[in-house]
Amino acid sequence: MRRPVSLEQRLRRLVVFCFVPLTVVIVLLLTLLLNYSMQYNTVLHNVTSASAFNQNFKESIDLEMYYYVVGSRYSTGLPIQEVQDAQQLARALMATTTDHDSRRAIESVLNLSENLEKKIYQIQDTDNYDDRQNQLENNIYVLTDLIQEYMYNYLYYEAVQLSTLQTNLYHSVLREVFFLGAAALMLLIYLTVHANRITHSITRPIGELSERVKAIGRGELESRPPVEAQETEVRALSEGFEKTVDQLRGLIEQSKQEQISLRNAELALLQAQINPHFLYNTLDTIIWLIETQQYEQAEQMVSNLSAFFRTSLSKGRDIIALAEEEKHVRSYMEIQQIRYRDILQYEVNIPPELTGCMLPKLTLQPLVENALYHGIKLKRGPGHIWVAARAEGDDVVLQVRDDGVGMPPERLEMVRAGLSSTAKIGFGLATVHERMQLLFGAPYGLTVDSTPGEGTLVTVRIPNTPEVKGILDQQEAIR
Image (cartoon, rainbow, N blue to C red; front, side, top):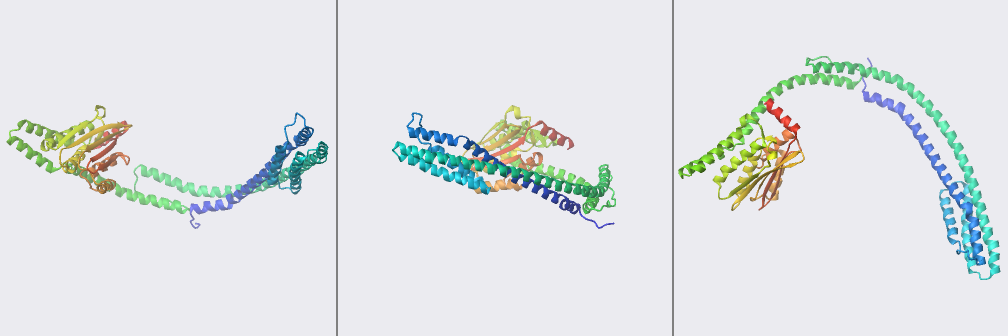
């Protein structure tokens, strides 16, 4: 058996020995065509510009100067602008003309045009009529005739160069196409032979790998010998498959154990969120209300406490409707308002059309508790807590805001960093944020804003689409 080589090495050889020469030939051909095309277009443009100039220049200048010299009423003044336009055209043609004879002709046109301008001003400075006529015939007419003659010479030389370029282009393209065809034929033969070899060496082991994958899909996880192949990548892939099968068997067993542990951890997490001190303090408050014969308030507090724990348990469900979460928060706030009647006021504003939105239970209560204990209680004087909800597209935004002491900037940065790293900074915040992102993904979860002396705003964003509701219902069914 031949020495194993990588598939990348074999394909690289094909590229080097086949496509690189072909690419070089194509680039040379394109460069040649582009070069000739640019030269041809430049010469053609020069011929077109010179032809348009030569058609009426002499007749126009001679007639304008004649009218000026004889003082005709048809005179429009000296044709200085036309002469200067001729000079500008000559300079433009000089910049793009490469043929030696053409350049000499256009240089003569430029020099004669500059001399013509001087002779025109000379007539302007001459007062005698006979002298003007003499200058017109001996200077102006002669110069315009020479300009026209040299421009004809320029057109002739440029036309010759245009014909030469066409001939050269034809022969060059014919030669390059011949070499390109010969190279393409040789490359085609080479590619056909080697492609068949590579195709067979790849498709056979890949077919065997495909059958192995189908067997794994049917649950056949027993170990097998790796597929034999010349390419090192295919060998590595087959060996990797067999190692993956062995690891998969172990992971299946491990996953079963982890699911059991995860379920226990989730239950422990939910139980840990119910602060036992809250229960103790609430019971003490109920006893104090009874001792002071405030029976109606004691009865109301017992009822709220019952509703609070009924929602906390939720018949073992982890996902509940926003309406149940609202009842849970109201029960909690009613209890706390009796305890902190002198400092606590609250408002809950959740539109009825949003109460069917599904979310993890114990989402709002930890945020309200955090606002009470870390915002309102630390404030000297009465405080207010607002709970609100609104729709934003396919999302629902829940907000818990207080007018407590707020947080300094450095503390706010610590809280925000704790949310991103799921560190336990701020009572319940990291837990709620982590649960949101595990259920709904990175775009959802908590954001915190706070101003010292003004209060804190915690915003919860959750999705509210039928697809998400269906997924949550399926998760609950599995539980």
